[in-house]
Length: 101
Image (cartoon, rainbow, N blue to C red; front, side):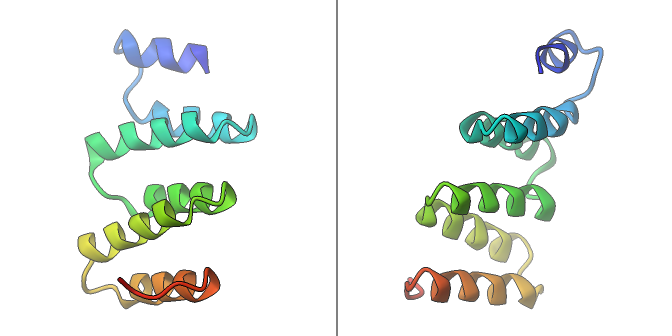
């Protein structure tokens, strides 16, 4: 992790190394650091389905349902023509016994 961070800081590697950093943090079960790395990727690349879904899984795993729902809403806003994101959020709401707000 330290090597990837140094590469990003010194511009030897691109910001895309944040994905590898996030994956390493996930393996270490350090969810907050993984989210931070994914957030850094989103700052550069914008909303990305893969990144947002990964963040959503982390939030669900750590029982942060409200944040998982927010991630689902971000996908719907970013990709309004993709019905699968609406369906996915509806399933999440049903499984967490919540209603659409």
